[in-house]
Each structure stands twice: as structure tokens, then as C-alpha cells.
Length: 450
Image (tube, rainbow, N blue to C red):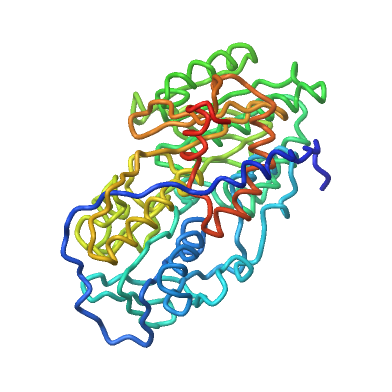
């Protein structure tokens, strides 16, 4: 399927790619729990659970610390995806193939790939068990298992995706269905949802809304489209500076937003979506759609929910400044599977990786880490086929911007960064352990050295 628009790669991407990661982190002086060991078929100095962005990045960094032969990754999938680009795939601006590489090609050379699923964690005995019954012990454990998509928690899904006019940019199986639904739109309600759970890339549910609105204008269908964003949240965005900018765009483009509305059922055969009013539990209403984009409920992976490393909500229970587990000092977490109180994004993983790398290296030397993760995360809010508001912020929901201009303004340059520079940084820098977020770049700009 040909893309709607072709975005020219910016040569400045190579300049930005020169800036490497920065950061260390602070940890408490806990006694490492590395004495016990179960009867294991294999033992590694560092065991990484998960081969997504956090897992591959940390495996690469740990390879430099302890040697490739002492590091292993447990990951069942044969394909590795750069998922942030799926927003543009769902809008026809990028091909799905551009997000896809083999897992083997991104595993650091020499690092052992255990192609299996994690079935059980036993941190008291410093080992894990896989689906195939294999027991693996470790000295240090890094948990990077990501987040689980729970489409089945919406009645009528995932089987409803077999029908036309419905898609979801959150799954490789359904992202191209979004583009098909967008192309096939004729007249009526274009409906976009946000669930009543934590999600990864919390801006993505509205990015596809803005792109769809732009597509309707481009194809002469805007006057026939009633664009509706139903969100379980009580605000359009959690950082006021960017929320104000988005509200202005919503007003200008005549988009209807309904807060505290949670999708609970899809009747795909009738093109109906059922929502519950969270302010009035039990009250529901039905919307007929011509196009529906579903953001699924999400949760911690089931294997973590039932493990000793999880908090009461099922997330890996780590210190928010050190990423070290609160109970097991030789266990660490990174990315979407943790209970870090920041937005779950690839940009957050990049920033965490630099901090966690330095943290573990100092702990290995029986030293106390000194730097702290500040909650940095980023959300390039795509508002059109050539416009992005680059939201960057910290734990306190205060802007933590990289560039010396107002990032709440829509900019072509930020779109080019989202569409071309960020994928370049991901494949060539982050996964190779050379990109720990833009802190160094931000310091250069703010010192006036750029």
C-alpha cells in the first residue's frame, strides 16, 4: 500500500545522532540479594527479560560491562518493531515494513538469545523459568517486558477487527486496518477512543484523530465527517502547556471531545460502539460509527502480575530515581512494565537506559549511584501530515524541553524529527547503547553552544 505522503529525510538527523547519552543515578545502600541460586540449566551475570526497546538497549549496554558471553535475553518474538512509527502507518504516511526488523538482527552480537517466554520469576532464588520449563539463574536481572494489550476486555474484541471500518494503531495486526478504514470513510462519525487504564504513548490515541481530520480535509470529506474523541480521562493532556495548545487545535478543527467516556463494547457487525460514563457508573450510550479507532485497555504482563517483583497493581516495583527494585537489590526494571510515575514512551526508555546503565555499573562495584532519573519523557504530538507539537516533561508534569524555542507550537521541523530522525536514532543509536535521551543536547542549547 503506497503511503499518502512521502517525507524527505533531514540531513540534520546525522548531526543529532552524534550526541550520546548522559546520566547516572542514585540508589540506596542495599545489600545485594545475589547469594541464593536455584538449580539452573544456565547461569548469566546479567539476564534481560524482554527483547523490546528497553531489553535490547540494556543488553547492549550490559555487554560492554560484563562481556557478551555473560548476558542473555529472553524474548519469544522473531520480529522487532519500532512501534512509535505506527501512528504514521495508520494514517498512510509510512509503510508498516519500515517499522520491522528481525529480532536476530538487533540482538547484540555474542549475547545469548533465549527464544522463549518467561513463565515464572523467582527472585528469592535468583532464577526464572520459561514456558519450555527451562530454568535460568542470574546475578543481576533486568526486567523489560513491556505492556500487555487487553483488547479482550472490550466486549466484541478482538474478533470485531474482522469487520471493516475499525482499526487500532497499537497492534501490528490492526494498524493497517486503520488506514483502510480511513480511506474507505464516506460520511458519518469518525470515532477515536482512550481507555480507562495506563497506556503506552498516551498521545497516540489523539494523534491519529488529528491525522484523520487532516486526511478528510485533503480528500474533500471533512464536511461529511463528525470527528469524536471519547476519552476516559478528564483532560486532553496531562501537561497544561501542551493541553492548552491542543485545546486550541481542537476548537479550530471543530472536533468533539467527551471526557470520562470509556469504551466497553464494540458491535462491529452494526458499526456501534458502547461507552460507559465514568462520572455516572452504569450509564451507557451507543454511537454509530463510520470509522472507529480503538486504543485498547492495557496492563502489566500477566507473568509479572503474579510475581513477587510486582506492586499491588501488577507493575515492577522500582525506585523512581534509581530503577532498582524496592525489595530485590539485584533486580531492575525499565520501561512500560514498571510503576515509574511517568508516561510510558520510547523516549522515556531512552532516558532510563542511560541512568540504569550507570546505576548498575556502580552497584556492581559496590558503590552508591549518585544521579537520579527525573521522569523525563517525550510525546511528539502529531497534529497533521507535516506538523508536530513536541511535548517533553518530567515527573512533576512540568515541561523539560530540549530546543531553544516554544515547543507547544506546531512545527514542520518537529514532524521531520518524528518521522525520520527518531527512527534513525532508534535503530542506529539507542538499540546500540549510544543514546540515553536528549539531556546532553538540551544542555548545549541552553548554554547557547549550538
